Image (cartoon, rainbow, N blue to C red; front, side, top):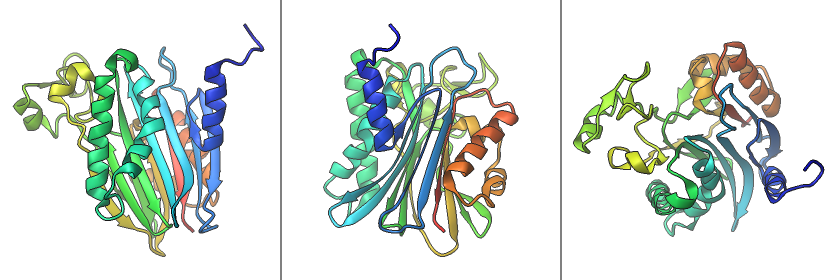
Length: 287
C-alpha cells in the first residue's frame, strides 16, 4: 500500500543517515572532523539485471576513544543481497572488537573476516546461500590506511597523478591450484570467464555455503601511509573496473575537487562505457 512506511523503509533511512547506502540510485557525502580537508562522497547505480540492487556501501567517520576512524567499504552481493546487507551492518564492528586491532591491525582484520564469514555460514538458513565480495578501508586519524578485500571490488589511490592499486583481484584463474587442492575446479564453461566449479567468478568471498569448501574468505590486507602526495582514494565494485582501468579512473576525476561529484562522474562514465552491472563507488579526497 502506497504512503505507508515499512520497517525496511525506516531502516534504510537510518542507514542512509549513518552513512550506509543501498538502493537503485543512492548518494551521500561527509567529511572528517579531525582533518577538515578530508572528505568523501559515494554514489550507487543499479545495473540492468533482473534482480534487485546487490551492492551496499559504508562511508562514515567515527570517533573511537581518542581516535577518528574513517570507515569505507563496498560489498557486492551475488545470488541475493542478504549477505552483503549483513556485512554492511556487522563487519566493521567485528573488526573493531578485536582486542589487538590497535597493536596488530592486519591480524585483527584477517581474524574478523574469518569470524564474520563463519557467522554467515552458520546462519545460512536466514541469510541464504548467496555471498558477497568486500573491500574495506579504515583511515586512522587521517594518516594511515588499512585496506582489506576478498573478491574483485577494488581500492585504488592516486599519488602524484599515478594510480596505485591497494587491493588484489581474487580471480579463479590466479588461484586455480589452491582451489584444486580443496577439491574444486576452475572452468570457463558455462560462461566466458573462469569460475570456481563453473559457478562463481571470484576465488574468495563471504558466504556461498555450497561452494565454501573450495572458496577462501581470507582477505588480502595492506597498509598505506597518507602523505602529502596522496591525493585521493577510489573504492568501487567490479561494475566500474570491468570497463575502466585504474589509471583511467584516476585521470577522469583528478581535476574534480569535490568527492561526491567525483564519485558520480565515475559511475556515469562506467554507464557511458556500457557497464551493465551494479555500480557503486566511493571517493575519499585527502587534499
